[in-house]
Amino acid sequence: MQKIVNQYRLSGEEWPARSKDIAAWAIRNNLWELHPSAAISKCAEDISRAMREEYMTDSRGRRVRVKHSATVQRNGKQLVLWDDLRTASRAHMKLSFQQRRQQIVGDCKQLKMDVDSYNERHPSIEPLQMVFDFTKDLAEIEAAA
Image (tube, rainbow, N blue to C red):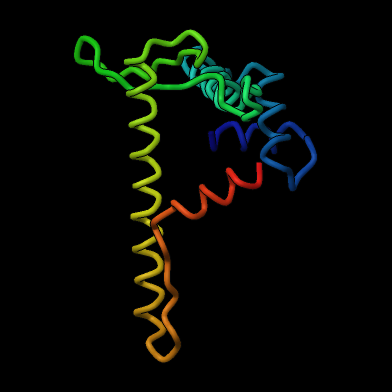
């Protein structure tokens, strides 16, 4: 990559330069190309993001996510499989919901460690308190809907 930068500078292009400008020049001059596997990975990331962001309104007026992922082991490999809420098997949805719940637990664990660390670093002020029982929060959200 440093060789490409040096070639860019020697070519008489504008300097100082943005890395995007150097990259565009390198691609135009066939000095760099995206490996097909990197293109596939980027496309897969974009598709996953789009599936995560697809919502619909169900028959009771709730805004719900349409596509759901579940991580599974197949032939010794870890795969993330996506399915549609409207057609997915119970097994897929159960696994997906369990895994999403574990992600929430992980986020709560990290938040607790962050709050505990902050409180320990500031012993002279009233400690911040976090409530990890979301029952009231969920009830309020449902009541407002």
